[in-house]
Image (cartoon, rainbow, N blue to C red):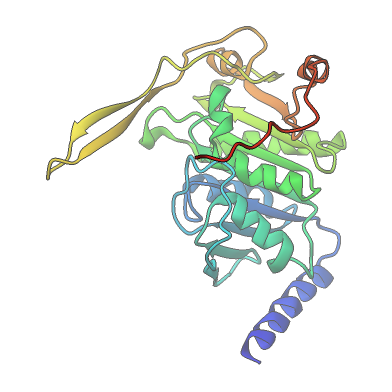
Length: 288
């Protein structure tokens, strides 16, 4: 009975919010730096005047978790008190899990029409796209059939992060995307914002850079009790080929990159289909 009452209360709150302001679109916001990170705070502040916003973000930092999903254990969800009309759920899970819980459970009575992720502390250009929790959250939204945009911003020094400036760029890009009817339902767009924000040279559309990282390895060091510990050493490429997000950021541009959800390598389909595959498995031999 207690669970049913809580569910009905959630449905009532969502329905009341939608009825009170039906003209504003409902947007779901997540990130991977944690619900209290300055990037997500700045993004929500920049868009809450135009959109109805629900935040479903990790309780703590989940950077580098990619598209991780929690499914073996129950997930704790805590709703924060609100004074600005924004519903905020702190979820003890990865960004993709946060979005899945929000879309399939928390926002059932008032489904979002758009998923935003970020603004990430640090860029997600080039090969980092594969491991980014920021992208994982946005991708989960796109897989649910919603348009999704992931925002990341270059941070050189913590004290100079300027997330308010990054949020202004995010708002500008989002407004132009929506005016063009983009991204379409089920599509994902990645936006990278350079530093310093005030001197960004403009906006360019790019592909994903595939230049190898300058440093990308694990180094062994002894633990306090003789354990074998391995520490990640990572330095991204300084630049890449023309037309890539890495190069665009290095040149001082805000980069916009459409990402495909279909990972099929269509160029490899014909060579694989031409292999004379055997129709039966090899015979099983019984050991003596």
